[in-house]
Amino acid sequence: MYNPDAKRYNTMKYNRCGNSGLLLPAVSLGLWHNFGDTGNYDNMVQMCFTAFDNGITHFDLANNYGPEPGSAEINFGKIIKENFSAYRDELIISTKAGYGMWPGPYGDWGSRKYLISSLDQSLQRMRLDYVDIFYHHRMDPQTPLEETMGALAQIVHSGKALYVGLSNYDGPTLEKASRILEDLRIPFIINQNKYSIFDRTIEKNGLKQKAKELKKGIICFSPLAQGMLTDRYLEGIPADSRIRTDGRFLNENEVEQNISRVRALNEIAKRRGQTLAEMALAWILKDNYVTSVLIGASKPSQILDNIRAIENTTFTDDELKAIDNI
Ligand SMILES: NC(=O)c1ccc[n+]([C@@H]2O[C@H](COP(=O)([O-])OP(=O)(O)OC[C@H]3O[C@@H](n4cnc5c(N)ncnc54)[C@H](OP(=O)(O)O)[C@@H]3O)[C@@H](O)[C@H]2O)c1
Image (cartoon, rainbow, N blue to C red; front, top):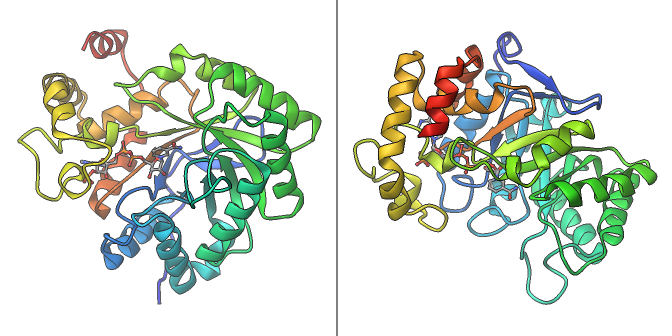
């Protein structure tokens, strides 16, 4: 029987998500990798315990997380049922739809048909009555924005999601979507986008500034560039690393191309008394634009390391310039 740490709320920082009533932990845990059929179930359970014991209340999923697609939701549903049923009201669980999930024309993109049936499937897999946040996972250039936003509205009205979010939207589309959802009086509160020292797209496409202007939260995914912005690859490619266990999204070439920059950043982190992972996360949290950094992990110790990022999120101008130069 799991007994969460009684001191779990003592050290985590909680940030308000835009101007909503929802507070999110500065560090959240994503289940994209290591929670599918190829992961080790006991390790998944231990990672969820470590997260919750240290104040990580937010767990992020999507319909297609696996492999196989859907299996991360199934495994997480089992973990919740076996250990967290008594703590559901202390958890913020999110899922998404927007990428290819089932064959045929209704299992992808942003139609009302796809979003509503996908969330029903996700709830069944996770054995939940509702999710806290439901996201449209990516912009759909073919479906009218009004239809996609209308589907999100229907989902909230049905009680199957408390809040809605948008993922991988750019600044101008976010603004249009936000206006539609505001007219529909739907609690759209959060954007989920890629952001790291290595990937500044949301600074360039206007999302970072626009979200602040519209008083919406931002949660950043792949804040460690899938492990590159850590000590993981400083001495070669470990056998248990993401590159070796699942090379679909990060490969050896990318690491080779970036390793000298990683080493230079690691020296700055050392001078700050942080690990590179801690510094990379602190860098995102430094200016209060971002509500939460959405980390992935393959072991509980990584979660503990990453949480320590919140202890120092202040950077000198010289450190910021040096990081930008690298
Ligand atoms: N909305 C979207 O389109 C989208 C897209 C991608 C991700 N996401 C979300 O964002 C979450 C995080 O993405 P991500 O997994 O790419 O994030 P990430 O935090 O950039 O990378 C996580 C990986 O970094 C390594 N790592 C983490 N902490 C470490 C530490 N302290 N020291 C050394 N290595 C460490 C681990 O790699 P090893 O496995 O090698 O140990 C871990 O699997 C996902 O789970 C998902 O919820 C959303």
